[in-house]
Image (cartoon, rainbow, N blue to C red; front, side, top):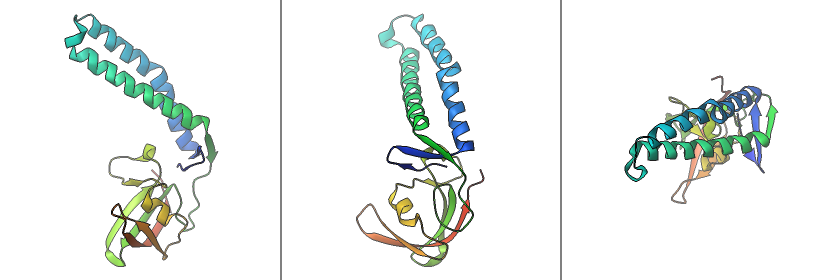
Amino acid sequence: MTQTSDNVTWLTQEAYNQLKAELEYLSGPARTEIATKIAEAREEGDLRENGGYHAAKEEQGKQELRVRQLTQMLEHAKVGEAPADDGVVEPGMVVTIAFDGDEDDTLSFLLASREYASEGTTTYSPQSPLGQGVSGKKVGEEAQYELPNGKKAMVKILEAKPYTG
């Protein structure tokens, strides 16, 4: 999993391999596909009123931004092991918390960067207020973090297990 600190991105070997494969696809086959879409749209005529052309150019821009993001992330990557199953909250862990001491009002989430967000898995960044509040805490401990309105909220760490995908 990842944690960005001082321009360093910590990754497991699996995460590094996934991001590298995505970069290779976007830099190769995906670039060819988008270039073909743009060329086909150009052949349709007037570019000022050509929705297909503008959509393809926008897609190309997003794709190139992602290529730059991945390139920078991988250039500054440090590959390490998955977190230990020791009950200490750190990036790469699925964390279950209870709000304000109410054991029935719980939330489980993956503490990781947005690259690991997937359907069905809530993901919080280690740099988010909640992520910063719970990082380093142990199961059973309480953590405080700041809400968007400036107030403080308290949560209790119920569980912290390494993410297994």
